[in-house]
Structure formats: structure tokens, C-alpha cells
Image (cartoon, rainbow, N blue to C red):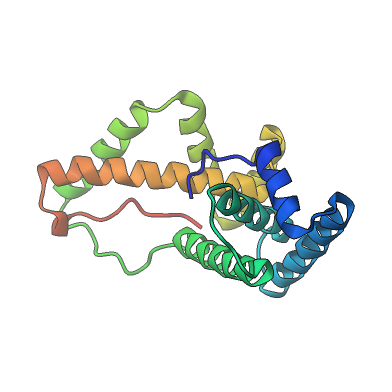
Length: 196
């Protein structure tokens, strides 16, 4: 799903129409489905169950707007919920530190990695660079408090800050990897190490 797609009034109306011909009944059904989704995500220990429930319903609205013929909306919505849980699990996995990476082969490789990191960060907008550096600053206990302060400063929920940092880190890793692959064989460098 494209991250640029946003739920429009027309798409939301289409979702309600698919739930029930009567607008009031459709609204009740919508709230019932949303409540059930939140419970499922809570049961599965999702980080932000309400945001995931909204995302699931938004994805359903998009599929309907795209013309998908859905016979059983609740079953289809359960499939969307399962996919969202898998995506969240993958994001959590990527946030875990990587301990099984090979060590750099030499000081020369470490210098190249550092140069690639600096070069990539130099091309970024200052606010994005500062956000990523602040997100991973400090040891584990200091990092947790720092992330809470950073989220408050930016007016974001902690989960939204995590997602933003994850996207920035993925972009940085891709840039570093691309620069290193130009200069040295892929088996002789490590990925940018991810913090927790």
C-alpha cells in the first residue's frame, strides 16, 4: 500500500455504504468493527492498537474505492489485521539490535563505513539528521527517556516517532550500503548497526 494514500471523505462514505445502506446503522457497524479490531490488536500486544485499527479500516476503504469486490467484509478485514500484525512484527524485529553481523575486516573498512555514514548524513536535511541522531543517542535507559522527550518536543506519539526513525534509518542504511558497494565487495562490510 502506498504511504501517500489518505482516507478521503468519498472513500469513507464508500466504506460506510458497504457496511450498511442506512448511514446510522453503517456508523454503528463501523464502530463495532473498530472496537473488535482494537481488542484483537490488544490481545496480540500491538504497540498502538487504536492506530492499527484505524489503519486496517483505512486499507479496507482503499480496497473498496479501488473497486475490489468483497463478499465478506469482516473476514476480509481480519486478513488485513493479520497483515498489519505481520508488518508490525517485522518492524519490531528490525528495531532489535543486530548481533550476528560480521565484524569489519580491517580498520580500512571501518574508515570506509564511517566515511559513507558521514557522506550520507551530510546530504540530509538538518531536522531529519538531528532526529535520527537524537533517537539513537545514549545508552539504553537514557535512550528511552530521550525518546520520550523527543516525541513530546515534536508533538508525536512514541509509536509515530519510532516509525519515523525506522524509515530514516532504513533510508540511511540503503545509502551507506550503496556507497560501500561501489568501493568494496559486499562481503567485506557490515550494515549500519541498528540501535534498540
